[in-house]
Amino acid sequence: MLSQSVGYAAIALGYVAAAGGKPILVKEIAAASEMPASYLAKIINGLARKGLVLTQRGIGGGVVLARPATEITLHDLCVCLDDPCVLPRCMLGTAECSDARACPAHQFWTQYRNRYIDYLRRMTVADVAAFELRRRANGGVPPKPESTDGDARKRRTAPLPVAIDALLPGEVEPTQAASGPKSGGSA
Image (cartoon, rainbow, N blue to C red; front, side):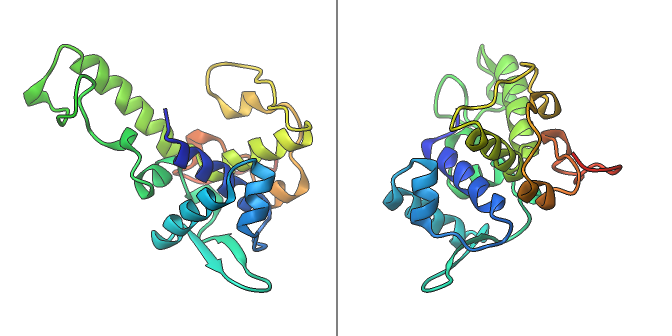
């Protein structure tokens, strides 16, 4: 499971991505995402130091993404915010997981961890933005998934608002984050 900081960062950056490049104040993001503004400000500051967002104080200021939402992954957020889930730790302790130190859970943990890290590398801020836009369009109720297999294209239950369609020229699925949007039309 991701840390609370990474969860907040993902939701906040999804909100920023949905704004289509317009600077958004931290207090607006916090209010819309129902998270403490002071805590979010610390998270945003950390992400700015690592180069994932740009911040500007004053009138017309706010937070914008430093690169496209399709190029910022949950793995990037985990690394920037020092989430322990990306550390190569043994499932049974704090030692580093390795073949040389194979514990009874090593084979299971290695396969599970590799799949988990691979998913974090495929899931982008654009995916979170699409989810958050659908959730807000549903009055705050998360969209009901059509499938439990983790396939984003099967989870889509409603058309995306124009803002996110403009942000994503083609439907971006977690499996496409590394290669970009698929060609052949829009969502």
